[in-house]
Image 1 (spheres, rainbow, N blue to C red):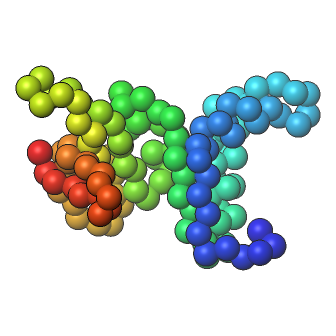
Image 2 (image 1 turned 120 degrees about the vertical axis):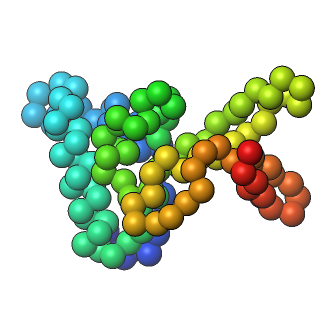
Length: 121
């Protein structure tokens, strides 16, 4: 990190884990090797005092058990929910927020020309 950025976004970090073969013999990384890769990545950004924002393509049923979730300070789930009478709505849910209070559950997420709004469901 020669340029010393304040913030970096990796979108999605899950691709790095899927395509990062071992440099030794071009094999897929083992789960512990993937975890070590993530730990080293996070450590590098922390030592540079840079905020790292990572997105990931993780299904809602796997989000709590994923290595990314265990290693991250904040985990946010974005999704769509079918509300029969009103159709499909976007939602945001804070799965984890280390050291911060938050309102649990899904919240309605709306985008407009004026920005976005979040309302508890």
